Length: 134
Length: 111
Image (cartoon, rainbow over all chains, first blue to last red; front, side, top):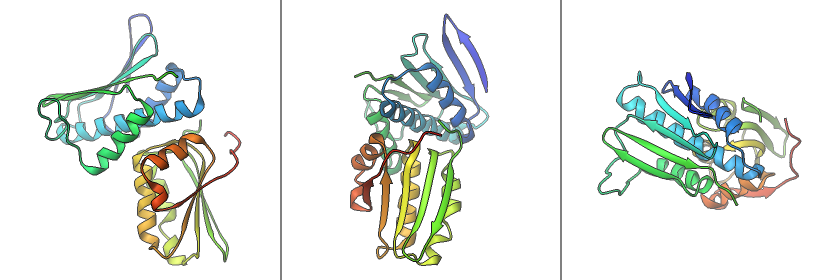
């Protein structure tokens, strides 16, 4: 895992496309992204976990030697996760078709991060997870 | 927040109780699967899975609970014990009340 600081406080992490990387990445999110409510925090960390697992799976399908990337912006209000996998299956004109298991994961991710936004194409996927506030 | 999943199992003639604490997710689900693999052979009349001390719960963990449900068969009731609001919200949004009996317990002390 390689951690770089970009700008004033942004953190850029390149992690091996392995499920074992998830706990460490989550520690970074928890340290830098503050949520006041512990249940909201648990749901947001769950959302990040879902997104990271999907990114790792996608990267492993394409080239497991390539790292996934996580960026936490300088304000600690947004996390971006990027993989260079094949993109969501059947993505056409912005429509995303997912299998049942990934669908459940995305449902939980959206519950923990209602503002979650996905950009996906044949060269990879970036998911933005803005930290929710009540 | 713990960094490791812990699974403990206690069996009596009345029930087998599985207590799970820490992050229950894609990275740790194999620990749960390994811990519960022998339970169906015990033939318990009731299984309780206490996730009150779980601090991260994702779809992989839910899949593990579904696998346990299938392994035990429909005759064995499974009670999911929750202690925090986020746990109940997750179980509700995925419709787990249809597969398990979801109950609320007192919050567990933090690790």
